[in-house]
Amino acid sequence: MLIDVHCHLTAPEFEGRNKEIIEKSVEAGVKAIITSGLGYEDGLKALEISDYRIIYPSLGMSPYMLEGYEQVMDLIRMQSKRIVAIGEVGLDYWHVKDDEGRDRQKRIFREFIELSKELDLPLVIHSRSAGKYALEILFEMKAERVIMHAFDGAAKYAVRAVERGYMFSIPPSIARSQQKRNLVKRIPLENLLLESDSPVLSPIAGQINYPWNIIVSAEWIGRIKGISVEKVIEITGRNAVEILDLKL
Image (cartoon, rainbow, N blue to C red):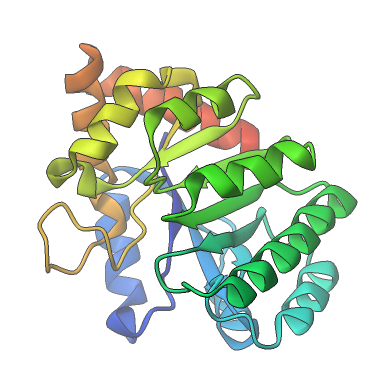
């Protein structure tokens, strides 16, 4: 049950290589990959490559590239039975520094949360340099089925989210991130998932990342928690199947 809950198989780095990447992922034991389409055109590509045996789609928007978001919301509504999640969506205060831009992000984020409730779909949350603020909005709007993807905030905020049943997906960059290790120390295994976020967040800085590198995440979680990697894969896989309602 090695499941990559978040990556981008439609990224330019992978163009023309999907067959090879899927074959290598399966050889490495990966059972399912959730590929996130960002924006309308990329969302269509994510739907096109999803085979519902290994590859499953989620649809969302980069919070700092929100032009045409209404069209993406319409696509999500039209394809709600084909997607396993809405996302990634959220806030990004790394790229957006001005108050006006951040206020727009928050307004549109709330719209996506409402959409997730309307369609009864889980959310995959981008919250770069904005973890506290994204969680405040999620709490305020009583969002329930939530995956905090590659959360870069303080562990104390993550603990508050765990109390509400939120999940945190851990990328292979944990191999070079003390923040991610601190996060894993504080979050129960029952609230953890594995993600690659490929082609980024590789275990080695500057290298292209791949879905099969989620085994690196699993190994680090096992090391930190003092349990076997098999146990990590079992529980995180079960968590993924449950929150994403995967039919494997």
